[in-house]
Length: 327
Image 1: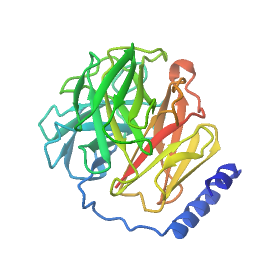
Image 2: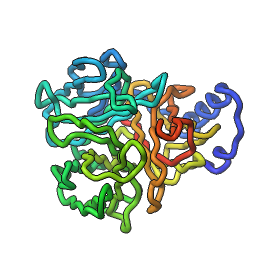
Image 3: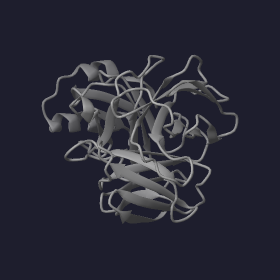
Image 4: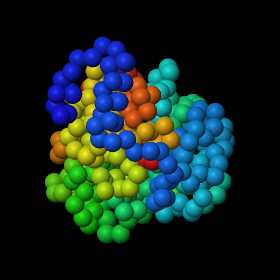
């Protein structure tokens, strides 16, 4: 069904809404409710106000572009991935670290692509290794700082890594965010991009500078979220808008270059969507890009925009990405 949906040429938001509503009716909408399996996530506006989340006890706006999201549990041994929401002047970038105010916190910075701190809205998801979730946190020296059990890291050269898990993760989504492995700061903005490795247990990762060149010394948090994860939907979407793999209740399409809609069977108003640039297979994610969350046309849809880096013009661009909708 996704093949005919991806080929549709639609002109209005009303048409998008009709498709999304039909999808929910076909698949059977799932009511919004608190997650029983303790998924940890937050959606935070640029002023530091919590829009919604799960397991969040508070948000502190420390200063321009600096936030701390505090959870109801110690999250020091977890990974933190995030995506900015609908920046107005340019696509902002987001960086994570362990809490600066306490062990239960995740520190988040939002920056413009010149590296300056800039207030920005964001969605944050914390991966602590629940069933269907795995993670790895890699440091400045190509070192595996922490992970779910059984993970190994291989450095393939400057800015290139294989992260291998103990089980098959080939049906999963690979979300990655540049982030300090401890409680420090990532001073030099960069990007992290994912793809499939040479076997079904491996994620291929590249780290790049703002000009798009491979660059060593960029730490990152990698979250692998699978279709078996409770209260979550995943989608790995090709540049043309078709889903390459993902949850059975997730569809996607693209109406214009760089503009995508992901539809699920559940209302998403109380969920957090994260998406990062990555290839759909073993191809290198050659073209660097930013990924942002934008409002969906209806409650069971989320919009995703992919843009060139500002260095290359910042225009909307059709590139593949990995997404997770966590509730």
